[in-house]
Image (cartoon, rainbow, N blue to C red):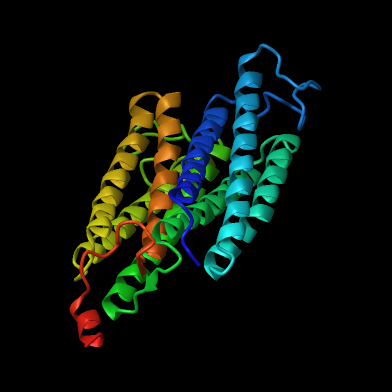
Length: 320
């Protein structure tokens, strides 16, 4: 089957970017305490439009952005099913995105009606990240084309298994951060890298300090995962330019993520720092998923620029 025009890839990529923006807007809702700005759903104070009040406008803006993203997700799924039916992976990803989108909308409703318990807030973010991962994979396969080739080189497989583990660790980092916010433990520690309110982790301080410390340790684990993934990719023989650039970008994003997280304390937990923290984390997650999945393929003749610049020695020997 011929690869669809670049318009399909543009649609899939736009949907990914729009989802990242929606996640950032959702962070604004949380950091400004606007989650209950519209106490009912789908209306806002019983109206189709919000009252002229800050928290209501912010929450309604989030709902509007979610509606736009919903349209984009449905459009991406429909176009995928119409143009890539024989591409089983893309087909099932597109199909999976639709019920997940509906479930995410229902969770948003539950988040409002249950007055934002931390478990629901965390689960809401988890489903958003899973949806983001699915959309990222769809965009990656759109870039690679339907005639992409699965690379079975052992060294590449090992490197990308490290990337898959790194993606799982990144997911845990994101969820731990969401729980910190949902449990109102963001400002439980007002210094960095230590915590003046609980000098000894899990021994001093209250429950909020323990939650905050746990997140910091999880972040440290995330850093180890990112470094491991980058190292595995950079030393991989035959890794193309895109994979190498992705490795360096991953390190740069995570370093920025740590600095932004620390800046929460340095800036007295400013809204800008807290929003940037989640936005960067989401971008890291999407990039990690893209590396772990798309890195397994060489783009076809109808795909984009190759993920490979040259075959590895084992691949070359196998082709002889």
